[in-house]
Image 1 (spheres, rainbow, N blue to C red):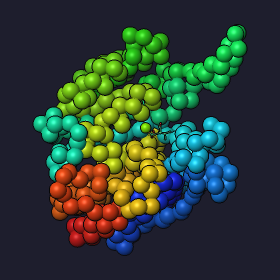
Image 2: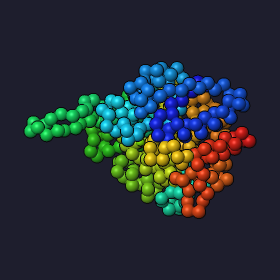
Image 3: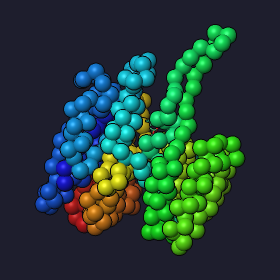
Image 4: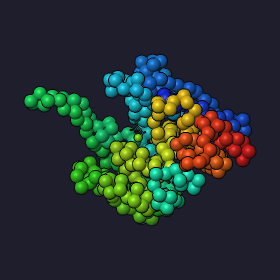
Length: 357
Ligand code: IPM
Ligand code: MG
């Protein structure tokens, strides 16, 4: 179990440290875990002048799985786009062919009060967003800036998907739905965009191979609304890169906090990169206030998807539940009157629960 560890920037190193506590427990039990560390994002830029140094990419290539913290910080905001921390993440996703991004949103009953939505709307929430991760307007060419005929500056990007790219993510959506309640919603903007018209066509074609899964289609604006109106009506959502980026941040608030949402980004052979969906939160970095649970839950996903150790995945998830059940809350998930603990204390509690499980 070769794991490349890329802490990144801001709260990245703190939350990854807590996930490593969990790895320590598992390694002590005898799991053959090997770790190697690399710099990415702003940390990559600071040490090697690149958000994705060649040495980091080599490390990730050699590993079975990658654990990533978060990237970005205000000190890098003025860098040219190709040097910005986000290029580290986008670059590694593309270079490793991690086209399938799984973002489960689950509301732990203990956190019903932490959501900004009414508890009766979010209670029992349990959905997965399957987001395409290496195509769409994120990577489409041409893109850039130019000057219009009358000398005005213009920025442009290209939304594009090939049918092959659509079909392979659709299959991941159908397979995911098959393991759950056999309901799949494909989200697009087919009332306006040609890319989306093709998307809808191809998803419908792929559906013929999955007659046991009920497929429906929804426009992205409606999906954004339905997610806050009736979030429990969703089970598995499959969508493109940009829409998935936006909808998964929205879904995180249903689960109480963006600090709770893990993700897996997989290639065709279950090699994966695992990261919380949240960012580097520079405003609280170094203050022992960040929630490490999304990162720890990402580790659970690593054992599930890359190492095919569902048993270990479930033990990690149980340990997170135990810490929540004990009443531990980082600031982002604390309701009024609840006991607030720091990043480290939360990580220790999960590790202790795992050790005793
Ligand atoms: C995410 C993030 C990234 C994205 C950024 C950091 C490039 O928002 O993983 O959702 O847009 O994909
Ligand atoms: Mg995002």
